[in-house]
Length: 141
Length: 144
Image (cartoon, rainbow over all chains, first blue to last red):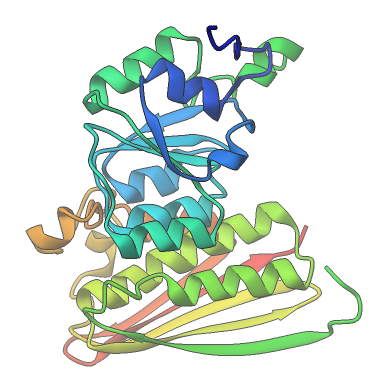
């Protein structure tokens, strides 16, 4: 018998579980919080740019796997981080992610393709209207 | 902010070159502000600016402190270090300008956005620096 679980995009965003599916990825930690809704995403390896432009509650896609990525996510109240090209974080970074209840996903695709897949699925960047704002008709900033 | 807390003062040590603990002080500042019920948006601004300043100490200086003072009206972060100082503050404020080595850039920092980020997150920012002595950055965040 086939597994009948289906997770769909909603008008308000997509879940981290759906993001993991779109990326053909898998969870490294935080899967129990994978049903949180994400409205925006950011793909970047420069943490200062992430600190400058990323919205709270977003998901960050990055090719860096050091502990500063998790610290950056913590400061910004990000809900999840996707490490691209299946790059696994070290134990220290992973423990830090667990301690702040961060959802961590590994994507087999490179950064460009991972971002492209999410963008094609309707998840906007951090300088665009969020899925929520699109749905409610709030003007872009 | 919680009315029962009139004012508070905390000081955290930061060691230059200790990348494993880089961000610990900012993380503790953020948790304290959450515990006293500060506004989410202000906490976020303080956390970003404090983290950028703390990273600068880890990247460039030998040793330093992050000091948090908060009362009902404002939050003040002072980051004080012993280090090389900033030779040209105006130049250092230019987005994209950085003197960080490649090893730091590989960690995602040193993109020359630290000081501009701190300025845009805070209501007031002062920088005092002496070459080969150190740098003090004072940032004020006003409660709405």
